[in-house]
Picture (cartoon, rainbow, N blue to C red):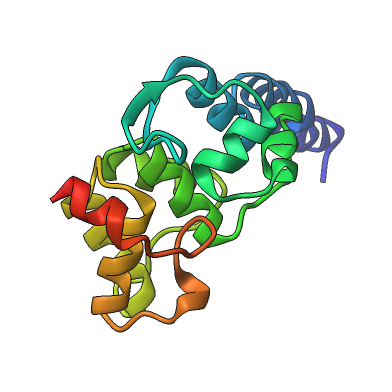
Length: 174
């Protein structure tokens, strides 16, 4: 091989800097799930039944305790989202709880789920039950969603929030 051919070969495969530049650019402009969820929490109101008054309320989440009250998820989940933990991948039940509380549509939910490398498996009964909730139960309480999951034969471990089914809340929604 001639010197000229060697130089051409080196030049042809001198891609590291170009690749690294593109990778850095993409990384700067791509948000983690937690960062995206934090934007939703700060910009979207949630609708829930106030446990003391029994009235339906639409409001922004105030803090970690309010988040825990509304979602049935622990304040640590709120903290992970607030800190924007890059590598945090929520359990599917946590993910679905957030999606239902914030009434996200199926397109947004699938895009969010794909943003951290997952999608819904069409052969998984739980996944398809969650898709059913997304399509048919937007705007319903977590108690209502859990009742639907119960009727669909889904195990309690896959229920949303803290897993409760409050019949009084459900009756108010019907």
